[in-house]
Image (cartoon, rainbow over all chains, first blue to last red; front, top):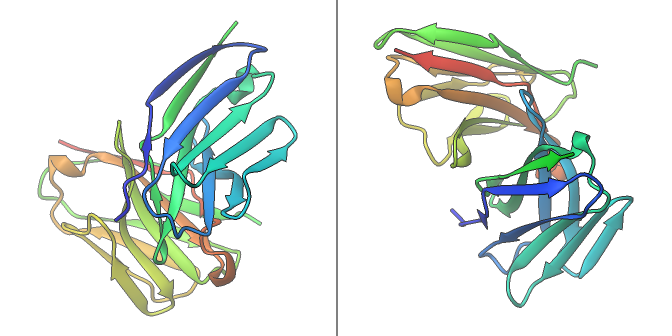
Length: 109
Length: 113
């Protein structure tokens, strides 16, 4: 399978921006995904980006894609306590998704 | 709609015991998946199904079996549980046309002693 990599932890002050980074390996991926897992719950699709785009903005979320470096990032503006969660980057692989290990975001007051 | 539901939510097994985890979805999705989540390892795919009556192996299928007798249900079986199978298990489903937009259940926390 493909190898998706993420840093494991991020601590951010409430009101600041969070940036979560991910690297992937399959340059032919047509879409790349971000999923969010709140404490004690399953994953929910947060957003995705089509591979022919460099950027996608959705309210407080901005996804940046650098295909040359196979780098994906998720920026959360004005981070709130409700944004505390694990964020997973995911890449399509045949009929499946390959997930990164997840970045645990902790929002401190 | 209930979405994706999983039964049970928690279970403790002794080594060598067997059990079945049930996943049900009411969205008429063709694809269903079983993952396990372990700290620092993200989600790893155990088995998946592309339709009723079909199953396929994922990354970590050893020690597990699955069945998809009805489109809405996907069962994960552990025939002889081992401590290495202590994990949180998630079921997910998706439409064939948007198969990477997966809907997840709330998870089953399994401890094998």
